[in-house]
Image 1 (tube, rainbow, N blue to C red):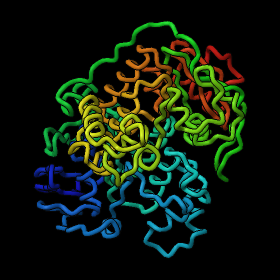
Image 2 (cartoon, rainbow, N blue to C red):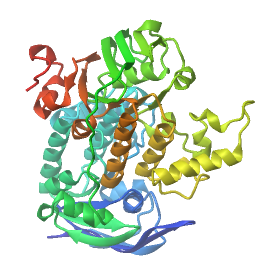
Image 3 (cartoon, helix red, strand yellow):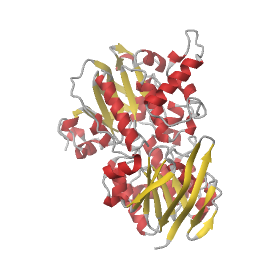
Image 4 (cartoon, helix red, strand yellow):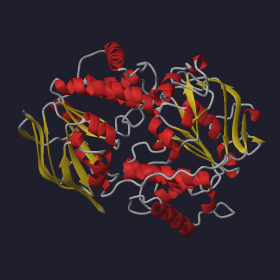
Length: 505
């Protein structure tokens, strides 16, 4: 078998950390090769080196048997290397077609690219409208754009960094069919995922990183989730402990909320009703782009067009309240996209603390530097966030560590109601278990928790009740123990009216 990629002694140092420390890795033609490791283990840095977005300090790279020095992503694409990033590299003011067109080295017209996108989207089950501006897309839809853009380059080596983090199980199955098909045609795939069952199902080989070094290689099909976890973090993730408790009083209720979309390609909300009580975790499942984004904006106070009585918080009508008023009443929200809505990339972690934690300010609105530093340090320690301290810029953290910081900042505020979208997006198995345990701890303390997630396994693991969202409508609620993956999948198509609410099947 022809060797597609050969890395020897790749090293990358930053002022306070060695991200890659003498890494060697070989990928054969047509091989699907997993790279596994905790958040901050050096996976994304290594992929960016292969893609030419980061220059190594030492080491050698050979591609198709020839020594190369990959100078830029454009050079990488010319060689036949494409990458799907975990953090999307899309221009929000451009359309889907314009974004894809920018990344293609061809003489195709914009209209031809639009047609190619539609053809690929249909063939791969990754439905997307080429004419939609990117800023109107949910994270799951943005992920589809990145995948289609990479596949259109007909790569010899495709790098995928958490490609299924916000895809539904049905979309994942379809994507795996595509990846197996293109690998059979000779394309090599470097695959990063924290979902161990995916790696075992899809990948031929696996290289494990820890603290920037290779600590193991294996054939995933011969491993269990537990053994892969031990290779990655040195232990199995702790099992979640669920405590049976009766739900208390209703703390959040949405009453027949109907809102027209604020953006041209958004989703209208149609008579959405839900309740969340103290001491329970309620989940909303659904394919990205079905109204979850619009609902979250209405709940958080970003969108205040709803009638006051359509949203009630702790018994008060708050539909016309802004985000700060709702926070003061006990509501804390984590939006789906980390950078831009939850944190400002160029600001330090302690500066980002001030965005939602006003107690770091004095009564006159002045910054209390020592209190701010100590509170940020407390979050970093409590939630085991790997960083260079409170002064670190948000953009310097790995995706998983940034997610832990954001979740920690809001959960540490002892919310009365906690609303979160995609709580463990791009987070390693150990950190995901930690976040889910903290969510259940909030529940035990009496918090009312609403979780919007495209990971059905996650919802089944932590929720007491489930809703399903489709085309801006919300299904009846169903107890977790009465729900099935198949049934929820049917409801994702909006077919709950054809089945009894308590027994989707």
